[in-house]
Length: 156
Image (tube, rainbow, N blue to C red):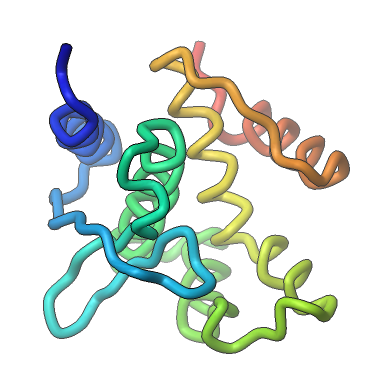
C-alpha cells in the first residue's frame, strides 16, 4: 500500500497541474490554531498541522485549500476582472487566525471572505474526484459552499 506521504505528493502534483500553478514544498509543524497555513516569505511553502500527519483526508483538505490560495495569487496578478479585484483587495487585508479573535464573530468574517469561500468550496469540489466527500459543520455555510460549487466550479 502506498503510504500517506506518497499519496499526498501525488495529490499535490495533480492539484498543481489542475490549477496551473507551481508546486511548492509541504511540511508539517506544530500550529497552535490553524489546520494549515500558506507561507509566502522567505520561501513559499504550505504548512499543515502536525495533528494531521497520519490523516490523509484532513491533510488533503488542507493542501487543496492552500493550493487554491496560490491559484488566487496567480489569478490576481494575471487578470483584471471583477473577481481579480475582489480577491486582490482581500488578499491584501485577509483575515486569518493571526488577526482574528476565534471567540467572536470575526470567525464568520474570516470564512465568508471571497478568497476563503472559494478555497473551502474548491477543496470540497476537487476532492470528490478522490471519492472524498465531506460537509462543513455549519449547515448555512455548507449550503453556501454547495451553491458556490454549482455556480463557479461545476464541470460538465
